[in-house]
Image (cartoon, rainbow, N blue to C red):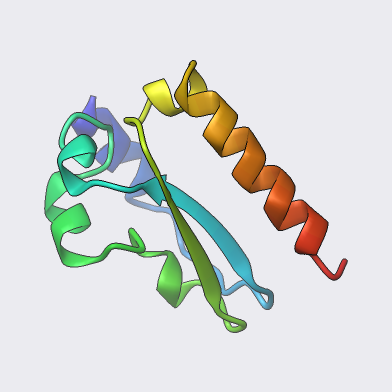
Length: 92
């Protein structure tokens, strides 16, 4: 799976986003080890590379769960509440 991901992502050129990014990540690094995220990158950059994309800053929200389980009970409720809170505070 990772090999296919690397091949498809290889030619992609990252473009700068002129806005603020809200990033939802796993709260615990050991949860990342079972995810599709490259564990070497997760150990180096807790923002998983997103910090270099934005010019207006980044808000990181760490949540319990793993890559897939974060979308299932009981973790989905916390994700839903955090997304709602972020959208309620958004100036746009």
